Length: 488
Ligand SMILES: *Cc1c(COP(=O)(O)O)cnc(C)c1O
Image 1 (cartoon, rainbow, N blue to C red):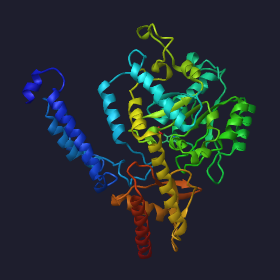
Image 2: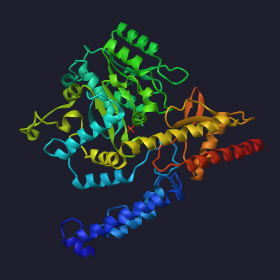
Image 3: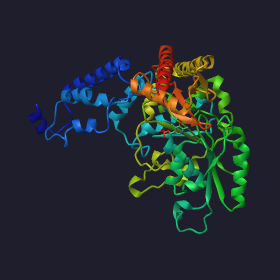
Image 4: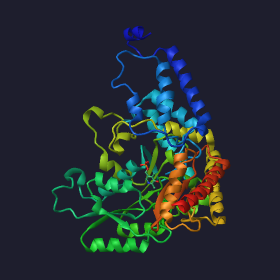
């Protein structure tokens, strides 16, 4: 077989492609089917997979059957199963059937969306799909959208656009070696995601330009402190350019007072970028809309369909009212990319650092069409219900306490059974025991100086019985935890 493959210089023959494709779809189906029997966290050690793999690529081509067999034998045991319904760590994200099939098609078309001409379908479907999503989220028409890979990259582009709008000609002159430039300041809360720090690093602003504003006891940015920081910076000769409130912080899903922050941004002429990477999809629910009050006044917003909209990683939706500033920051058209329709169409390459962009909208279009607005609403609503249910068990138990309000579908809490001297160590051990069991995965954060356990509920596969199972594990865990401590 491999001999004939060597002589033939084309792609995989059609019959092999069909058989292999069937095998892959079957494999995926079987994988989803047996998910709950797999450990949530991969039971492997650093280096174990690498040492099982050859040191170099094969000299002659191998059969597809051999490749897929190794996926089962070698790759699968090293997979952390984000799709497992008891994956509650970090944020519980999940892919879906229509999302996977859409992704597959986009790999087949393999369009590089740079110019409208190189990818008319990708260019136009991106606008249409983001328009649909914008309506579902209740955002006004002034918001145009663009898809990036991740929220980290979306936010970096937001700050770049803010910097461009500040009119300092950084695009041409740069920032280094310029004594005429004041310190440019970006504001966010102390609970902001690390991607904002990274964006400041990447853009040459430096982490010293990022002002982290203090929060209240609900982990929400204090607007009066923001105002004071801006006034102090201006008095010191600095130049505030951007403020980034978060709706749904990573630690505890707290919500910054966006309306108040919008007033301040307006008063001082700052770009307001809203980080709703996780919680954004919850805006499809009428009963959650109050958390989003004021976000329609933003200059830009990011939310991640790959987090809580059942779309396979990666797809981050960036909405912006001022696409002109974004374009001014990045548009650059070399001769070989000049086209006759240049001025009448949207060319994706004008809105960021990438030239070619993937056809990501296809998978989101599949997801929105397949589940429909109501199907998506029902799933997100159910995740919020399960989180509230879980929180109610904590409220009724004397052995656990809530450490933050449950705004969306994340519960922050800790075990506090009687007779525990060091609750941080106790909870860390409880978490490590559950994670080592393979039955579930939970993660932690620090809230008000306390180690808090985080249970995120967001998988398209999660049901009430999975939450019940986790609750059992936690209660069994504190039983054995208490024993272990008594024996110490
Ligand atoms: C997850 C998250 C991010 C980062 O998302 P990526 O797409 O992985 O870059 C940023 N901000 C918040 C609030 C998040 O929850």
